[in-house]
Image (cartoon, rainbow over the protein chains, first blue to last red):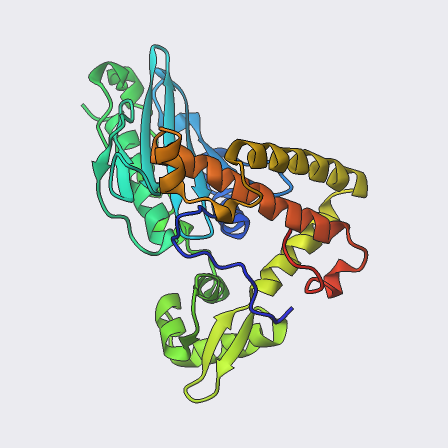
Length: 148
Length: 191
């Protein structure tokens, strides 16, 4: 088990598999946090994504549910999706790093309806900084539900 | 991110019981784990090429002495491999990560569950091969495929990444189903 394996993917043109190890770390770190009602990994034997459902206490009754979903790939690509269900409608916002012809590799599809094309941007290199920024942005929105 | 529409916001009565956001764990600490060990584990798992002790200390946000100590320990555990002596550089041992995942599959699932998952993934793999018209995802260029099939690059990316993931699962499931795979992870190559 000391061989240099074929498990490294460059940001090449053939895609890369989901990074199960990183998703597991993300689920481990987030699942005990008071922000979330629950954290699910599907399917259990090798998750494709980690789904974090926010505690309803952070939203007024007009918001029925809210969740953030993480997918990370072996080459560093990712897609993170925030979704709210309202009594009348939805809100979606997406942070992406992947090849597309509608945007630069790093971009966002902003709320309320995450349109394509989105907006070119740059995300931090370190996955933990990406996650921090996403969690902070969501918290800002949550706070704004409670201010006049 | 955009602020909520006014009609979604809490009304005056509801605002009385607003959640205490300030009491929440800072996201920055949340994603970093609680221990120095987590910082070093994250640092080495994030390595894509050999790195010096100083590089790894920087990545982890701790001192060089701590880095040396953890790297020593990680090397004994098989998590990293030392590549050069002077200066000392280390790289992530991908074989360890795969071994750990295979162990988890063997502990958490029955042979029947693993076999059934493998069957599902193999069927998916065959479907992808038919869709893409090649034997392996590495034979496909996302941009060329998207243009040839007149679809968005992002859609081609998503589909091809799913195929790569299916291949990855098949490899792990096959290893988990091999007897004694804990010591023979190197005896097979990826399908």
